Amino acid sequence: MNGSATCPAQDPWLAHSVRIQQVIQETPGVATYNLAFDDPVVGERFRYRPGQFCMIYLPGLGEIAVSISGNPARTDVVPHTIRVAGRVTQALADLEEGAGIGLRGPFGSVWPTDRCAGRDVILAAGGIGLAPLRPVIYDILADRDRYGAVTLLYGCRLPSGLLYTSEYQKWRAGGIAVKTTVDRAEDDWGGNVGVVTVLLDRLSLARPSETVLMTCGPEVMMWYTIQAALDRGLNADSVFLSMERNMNCAIGLCGHCQFGSDFVCKDGPVLPYERVASILRVDDL
Picture 1 (cartoon, rainbow, N blue to C red):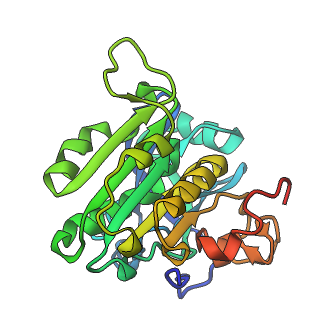
Picture 2: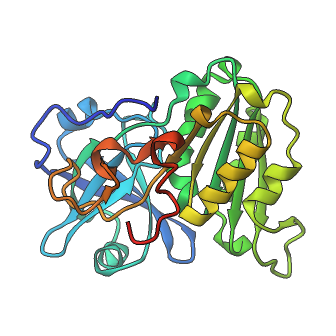
């Protein structure tokens, strides 16, 4: 099963005041916002696990659901990596460091790192889908001996769109194999060209039946990555994915994020593949 949902003990509708402590421009149109609570007591109590998300509130404009992309062991800031895609995200991009916004959460289910002890792990991400998996990487690095072989397979449209490139060397030094690919090479790119499944097809799997796959990215990318993993011998009950839907309330009341019988905000965003396999490729659901 996937990690249990962990919602805040306080009123889930209560948005806490936070400041944009730092903005890190990751790629064109994508930035990481390190948020710090105005109330230090709230900040000290705030805890999250890999895979969870928060609702970021801009007064007068609305809220957006964004996965937390930081290190769960850090309590001074709560990072969120955000792509400009609409009115709220554009308004957020226009803010300067020090600006105040609202934050409520954390919400949602978590990546099943507790199931990975002694097993091999494959993290497969596409585009900004690396952001929800980044906390898993930090978790694994903090207790690397607890896991077997760990591999990150990451694909993007262009090399200039790859996230967190300054961290790859540290991840590799910590015992995580980092393999990247792009749909279209640029002049200075000497790496792989192709989709993420190409990386998976080339990956040597010593014990596929003892390997866990966690994947996040466009649904078509996740679908084909999962099928490739199953073809390589991974068990369906060892495959997990993070869904992205229009989440408005974050607690399963409004129905905007319903996916089959599940509500992505409450039952997800991390879901076992077996739970959604029959409807993952159904259009307009």
